[in-house]
Image (cartoon, rainbow, N blue to C red; front, side, top):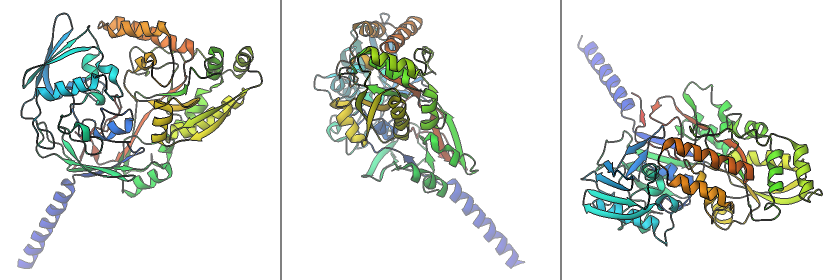
Length: 492
């Protein structure tokens, strides 16, 4: 009897220990396709930066939620003046940066003034252009006065580019990011992984994970085995064309949602012969979106005809503006004086949507007389050559920033597009807070871009997430370029 009781007790203890071990799992290895150039979201355009640090390491006055909603963050509340120009933010108190320094209103003033300064290196400096003054009322109160009302101001403050940083660490955030978020930076093994760990002194709701490793796996052929073996437990932005290899695995969950990723064949509008409207229109007529979507996204992309997500209520379906019509494309090239064809280059960054889609695009343009030399480039090369120096003819990229149609009004932007009529619409949009009027202006902006064939509009990038079936808390959609881990946990 004593032996039996001992065995029972031992079994109960073993079961309890086993259950506790399963319930206690708090580590996660998460796969990402691209390695960020650095880790400072206030000093770079690459989406890969926010995919690691947004909401995890860095926080803003507001934040964007999983459905695109504006939520309080470091600002617990705010009031807006009757004229829509003065925002008074009440800040959370007792907040500290990961290096132990205190967060207060002075950090907000520093961050916003730094982002809008003449020498700012912020990739989205336009987000702050409406700000006139930033005043510290007291350590827990900041007053931001705008030059004019701006309907998108609270939303803009939720971008990764608008996170709050401290003057003590701002200059070193690229290599050693220090924020106020629930995770703090631990290590970056270049070319391999970035590791975050739980911040014990976090001011808000504690997170469930103690450790999260972002493992960099650019090779699609390696991503599937990593998931199937369990070496990587989640791939929130999984290549759509590889879904068929994992969708029937009972240990994995495949979740398909939407993004803000307008995927385009970008065109250098000031570089001959692409400064000719008929040439750009010919390119648009040559594109067979269905074939590109099938080949680059496994059929999961949604066709677009202008720079707006189909999930946006202001979206106008302009996919019929340029139906696939190779004969029309050839006719336009002849009218433009290029009946003997055009030679150009197509620079393709690493993502599958670009490399796979680029092969199809090159074939379709070749059929109408535009012969492209495909030049594969790494992400850092793309940012330098294409985005910064505008040294390109054509390229394929997905713009994942939310509601970013205004980029076509920026004179130094890599499209090299200039249309005063479009600029006027964007200027009016920036001054308008009435939602119905904003939607009307966004419709006008979309139509101008389509008429000018500024770029070849391809598809809205789908968000395909694949993760261990025991995990919960990941976002289905991607209203902002982020891997928000604040609610992610292992089910018990």
